Image (cartoon, rainbow, N blue to C red; front, side, top):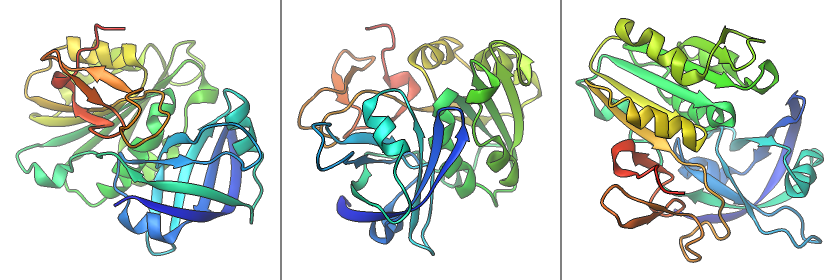
Length: 263
């Protein structure tokens, strides 16, 4: 259900050098949101910027709150990072199709999360949803450097065993997040379900592993202009040669359904 709501900023917390956690009171959107979905945020009424897509980091339906992780990469995100409590944001959401829930797949013995950089943010919502599951829960979080590892404590609070890796070795193991996963594959209880979000090359490499006894769902990161499938700016090629819209058909797909070789 798509809702347009004026959200009131409750907190803007800087959690790293250029990453902010934005907590917003938007009760209507929070009720209908699902792990893996996203919202389109209007930057400012007085700027020419288009709405920007951000996945829900998590929500609190009881309090009517939604949370987003914002990484400052340009003028639009810089505007958002400067927002103050009590300011109002125009928000449209929830949008897209989220993660299929592990509760629906009773045959799995483990749930694995693979988050690359900011890709960890939407996976937090999923981890919170799976908090009470009585199966093995493992998270692999990776980034270029320690300053880009986010929300690892929240994953731990939800019962996930967290494995951290950085490209420069400044935190955790010095390796890519994919290499960290491969090093632990033999110890993961099978069959397992894996949820991934991160850079395209990470997802491409994950698919190439051709893992057995495993079902993989990936949340894709693409630039979006409309968020509702009208502009076709976020189309990706499928393994069958057709095209899917990340905003409307995704952003979550079975990883085998996407052709990561194109582009």
